[in-house]
Length: 362
Image 1 (cartoon, rainbow, N blue to C red):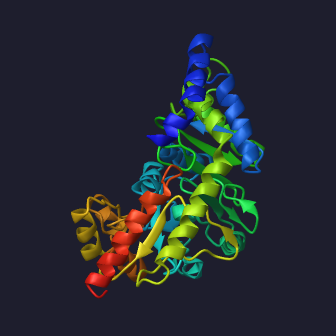
Image 2 (cartoon, rainbow, N blue to C red):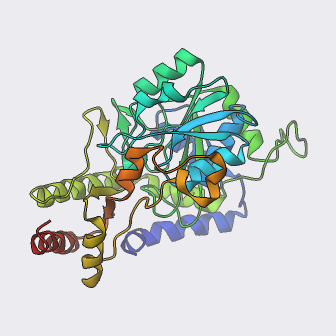
């Protein structure tokens, strides 16, 4: 892939340095990346972990979320968000989303708060931040914790504050396709709270403080040195990645602005990092089928909301419970958007969409 070719030499050098050092687990590269990425997000502490799902899981455990607790979140997200909540022993409680941003509809939160509610988990989906002022105001009113899911929002901002710095604790992923991705799995938990940071350091390593002394039940969720070294190199380029994504998004908006597609809505309060450029159309399936005939294969993020998935039927949600979520999952699809996308490739996709819409009078 083009990104790898562009950065191959420094990536190989980073890996070689780790292998030569002989320090492969929880060494200086992990510590340096934790420090540097936390600083990038304007928070005091970062704890590197093995993947984004466990970042959410450990964040919940650090907050004391467990059996009989409820966590308010959305159904329009990756399964990982809900999987982590259930794995922590808690129950996900869903609120609907805003139709223009596809993000948590904060006006619905208070309607689902109960005596069991422990935490609000907003998902900064597709690269844009939730209305965190409203989330935090509600959390303060009801004495709840806030955990941001930042897996798709590296570098995004809300009122000039970075994603990950807007809550009690935040979790992110460095899966290969992310804005800041490694060549495998990786994740991090971010916080300004010293006590939470210290507990996270224990929880990711069997609950240990020092060698061979577990002071609480913990887990094996460590970020390794090789991925930390790769991420340190790539962190130097993160603003380039985001600027290119924003440029490509602006190009799509310009080129496709005269079509019947509903294009992404960027809030004036946010800087969208455009992890994905997600559009809507009532005839989504027809457009995708026609694009396939031209060898253009696009993704849907996400085609089935989690509250309707077989694996979570025990949560007792049914079709119609989250009408906006259900509506948009039948209309959305993602256009190609990554830093190495060329102008010709983008124009090829855009021209095909123009042609299909015109041909079918959409």
